Image (tube, rainbow, N blue to C red; front, side, top):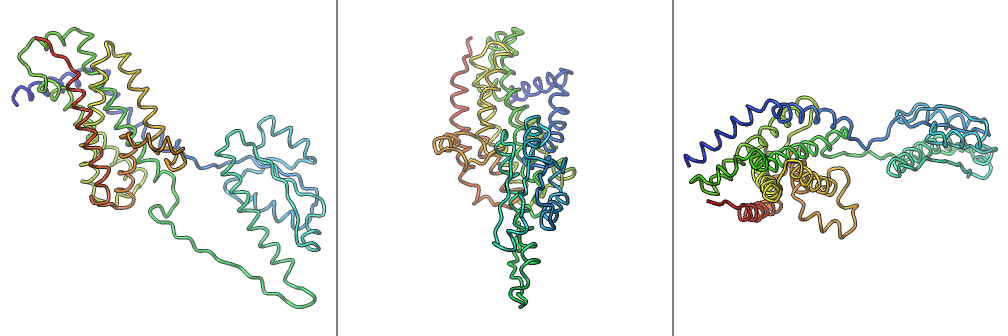
Length: 374
């Protein structure tokens, strides 16, 4: 135990002695948390909206005013023809074109039906889908209002408009703030990347400067060396989590409904998995560049298949099965469940024991693959 404490002390001194590493560990992650939490959003706003009004009626003006008063659309122009509007969309100056045909209001009154043409720039398919939902909701709302104004009288008798009122109840994120979803996930991303990269490059750095051979010929046992090398980064991971949770609560006002001790308990085991992966990578690489490249390769796969940015349920079935081996998936799921839903240990026990099993297996392989020669 005394030997391990000496190695841990030496590692902490080495970390704080490296002035180039300190900003990477203690400053950059939190700048990334502040920036990415505001930038990583799937909300679509400032949609460049244009229209071609060939009817110039009360109903068409009512419809256009709905888009002008919306917070999601910016009405950029009123084009005299659809051809000119299409040309502006090709130049990238317009995202949506609404074409209101002749006799739009007349057809509503006489035939009780009319058509609209909507063209959406769908290069970004996800954004186009969201824009289509916004447009459909505005048209449906306007349609209800127009009908209530035009059809109140039928053959001289007053008809009371029939309205269905829906009162939604939003659980776990009643303000519909996208940061409530993204901030916990980005915190997972930062904790994972930092601990993985540092642990992967740690032993490799000893190889490059030639001190690993000197350590290997000492009486230090293999498990003492590995624990002493990885324990400081385990502590740093928990420290980053602490500061990240503080920023999430004070800056972004993210609620922490559940027991924060559960987050630390799960993170403690999760970090063992990440540190084991970093150790395994360092055992088979000779330079820090190689270790960084391999660590980044796996990190990208883990992040994209973790459910952080896209729902796992939207993936193909074979991809969903692969995510079961992704540790980041479980961390993202757990931190959101505990922080936002107030989940208890019984509700997170299954992913917790899965991560504990992964930690045992991965670290077993990592320790076995580390070769110490006397």
